[in-house]
Image (cartoon, rainbow, N blue to C red; front, top):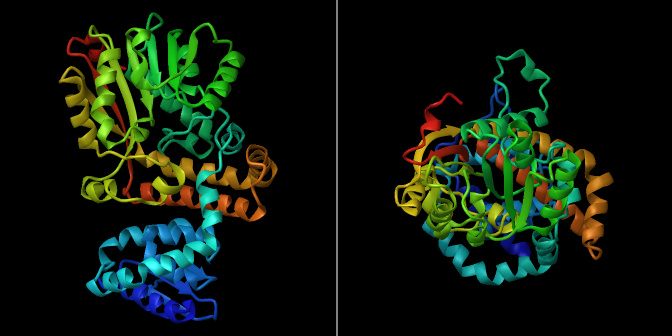
Amino acid sequence: MALSYVLPVAKRLVLGSFSGEISGALTIDGPNDDSITLGETSLAAPAPKVRVLNESFWLRVLLFGDIGFAESYMLHEISTTDLTAVFEFFIHNSAAVSTTTTLGLVTSMVGNFFRRTINDITSSHLNAAAHYSISNEMFTAFLSPDMTYSAPIWLPLSNPLSKTETLEEAQLRKLQYAIRQTRIRESDHVLEIGTGWGSFAIAAVRMTGCRVTTVTLSGEQKRLAEEHIRRSGMENRIEVVQADYRELGGLGTFDKIVSIEMIEHVGHEFLDAYFECVDRYLKRDGGIGYFQCITIPETRYERYRRSEDFIKKYIFPGGHLPTVSGLVASINRGSKGRLIVEEIKSVGKHYSKALRCWNAQFQANFETNIVPALKQANPSMTTAEIKVFRKKWEYYFCYCEAGFNTKALGDVAITVGRENCVALLEEE
């Protein structure tokens, strides 16, 4: 069966899946100047547009759903001037998309054959996008100078200084918040699980004079973090250890433990064990822990946990976003009640602006900084694969921005302490 016969059927099935009441509008322009609008447009809220450049898009979406949409964008089968708005339309209308018996039946009947056919055409470029190694230089090109890769805390819009605030300033505010929450003192020995590139450890020592042992699995991150630490003159106060967080028994116990957006890499089945390790490493007398983590709403969790999405396939293979209640339950189970939740702060509202900043820097520095870094790390990478790689990261930034804009994603900072931790009674 030729693709030319199947593509119109795929298009009708995909468009027909929007069977409920639609919120907002989305315009889809075809390659032959044909145009379809889902929902009703208004002058107050113009509809974002998707332009279909290759009709294979329809079959890819029919067979692979949201991952198919992502792959079509990466392969330049579609384009749009406002990808974030397109995602927000789909998030708002997730309940209006029908997974009807007819759609499921047709997909299963033609699925295996056409999955192979459509994947044979493009799989090499997509596989490359998923698996090419990423160097420190690429992250340097889009992160703020401190190289903090997590949600910041911005000033409220009511503050006049918010208009000129930099991402680096907002990231430092977040790091300072974590330091205050854990009541770090000069005499403390702090364990950080997940080094990143050293920004928390440096900020903690600079602010309090404490000692920090920070743990990472990445040799690349360890190398650059140690370079940053040497430049800051703090190598006598900070030790970077390349090890699994489960294998730190020889390091003793710590006064404070901090982990900023590392729990997303732990996995559903290991969350309890993670907090069992935290309980083991944290001093029983007055210990305090702080954990920042991206989360997903309760109503979406079970489906999310059992399925693959764009982030899991192309950005963080093996990644897992817990729910807030799941985190609290794992803290309690893993520590056998010895880690008591003191405070939960939502910081998800701060993420969207950071993602826009990262995306802008990524685009501005792509040709001059990122392409040379990619070619150095991956000498066999072709021009076509570099284009797919760029589209993948554009998609990632906008995908996450829409998630935080609509609260389909959250981010929380959880402070825990021992039962006898009177330091938590003090004002932070």
